[in-house]
Length: 388
Ligand code: DIG
Ligand code: MN
Ligand code: MN
Image 1 (cartoon, helix red, strand yellow):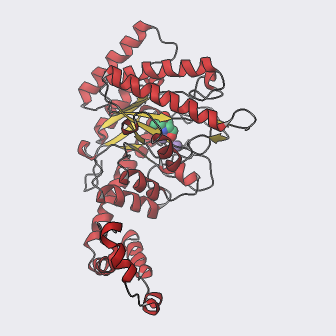
Image 2 (image 1 turned 120 degrees about the vertical axis):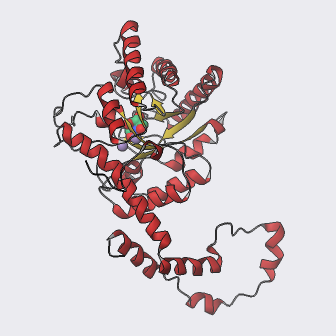
């Protein structure tokens, strides 16, 4: 096994969902290609690779049809595996997308009985997550959407979504779970169009909730990339609003279905700037790889995928350090800081309005002056290409 500067350790806070390395390689056009990996095996292998923790949907750990006795056994065995490996469960979530009962959504189904069942299932899944000490609870509304707008009025769907989140915030408070609830946006797939498709849509809804302080974001690389957006901008807005509660890392080619590829394996430059944002900001949350190995892989390939995900993040982290240490990049950024780009350069009306009203501007000079971004980006690319 490789032993170098890119060896992941628990303090890096790398996590994987049971469903990620446990993905059997099924796709809409093909059967599973890999045997099912049991949770205990996943915990042991990920712990040995240097991961910090593992996450689950309720039914990743306890099948829908499990008896109470089976549930207790599965929970007991998983707790033993976690204790033996030192692995944690930082995040939990609910599968509100697999059961056909959710074919028209869970929180936003037109069927009120389904909406109530979704709340019951989520409450029970929150109980399970709390039993393992999870601190973040994710809401990915994979089935919350439509194929035809004839089905429902999106205004009503927003009201149902808000009702569900308000209800579950109250449950979180009543139970004393102290979860940070994190909405995960996605624009489409499996529904034709999914409600709350972007970070912006989710932030807007959060501020209409009864307890907006309890609710934040779990953004995913692939989901914003599918939308053609710059993922780091959405993460930065969530982060600046104090709403980056968790993050799903993976890789994605634009204009395709949700590929959930190994982190860093597609857009190297975007991956670099995402790691730069997380590292520069001192993000202390979990770095969750919500991704899976190629369908071509056997079990050995699955662990190559997991190790590569974490290794690539650490390589990008070293490139970020090289960027900050580069003297010419430093000079270019200092020049921008002198022009007013330094962090904390604010403007306030009371203090500044009269000064600005009276200020004399040398517009010809302002119009003529460039910003040297070509050189700055070239230097960045040369670091990424390994020649600087
Ligand atoms: C898909 O991106 C979703 C599901 O995998 C899960 O509910 C959530 C948590 O990471 N991401
Ligand atoms: Mn995805
Ligand atoms: Mn995800």
